[in-house]
Length: 413
Image 1: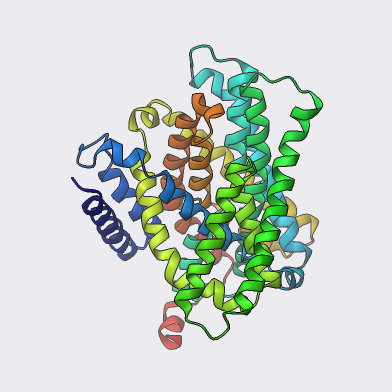
Image 2 (image 1 turned 90 degrees about the vertical axis):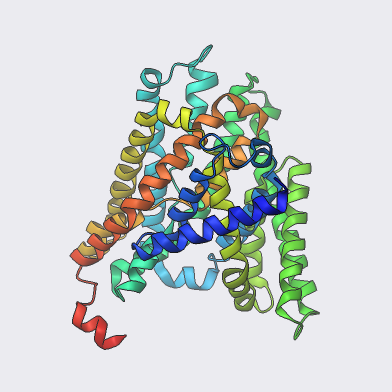
């Protein structure tokens, strides 16, 4: 089967399933993953395994665009207006979720996973650190769909979306640190000064590289004023692929670098609103279909079924951290009672960037012994979170009294 035919089948299947599940009230991303599952070479052998193994360049470009878009949510002025409540809640729920999953995994993993030659330092600890970091991000699209569908307005809806603007960024930073530490632990590298500094050099270099490419985009785009939107998209892709590629070449954190490009552009860039609108309207739909459908095709069902208890425990520990952390952060910021009680429930959905982080980890040879298990756990948990997330979000907004009554929705539509 030729490559173009496979790509056509992949896009068609992802689009079709995305529209079908959307009609059922579920996020499209769930349909994309289900399409990938049906096309998975491990099930029907319809798509050659060689094609799936060769999709790394596609997923890397998709990740560069996704992380750029995440950075684009972090404009300084709006974040300053959101106040300390949003910052406290985001820090609380992201970090407590990471901590809860890390500790919970360390406590249960030795009883659930028996790997040949596994040790606490070289296997269980790096696995727990990485899984904990992957618990931080939230997928706000499911909650946003509920908010738009029911025209929800109020402090809880506002807090959920404000926290989501910071959530993925915190997750990427947590993941960057976890990968650097896990690479040292799995490599049995002694903690010399150079080894200790390696994570900080990787992250610091990524920040510097991202700022440089963000400023370069700013200066080049100034000379494209009035040019077609298509030309701007070409420039965005050129900047992001160059930044991602150079970060890979220099062994810097690739996702953090492209996220910093987005942060730089949104705070200093020319026509920043237009730039991120182009990404949202024209690039993201195709990126989402390709990225999540391929993710479903990469799922190893033997590993998933073998470690299903770990998937369920991850979902439970993460939910505990999200709910407890959001409540604690809201309490410290002295937010209203409704924000304390219900904001965390809107932060349960997970998808998007977390699968991208797991795919990047799979490309790291130092983590080969645990990456397949982590990827399968994350994709399995994503399906669970994307299914229950809209329900918990609706429940939270309804209990907070921020959903319009049916008659009011008809009147305002």
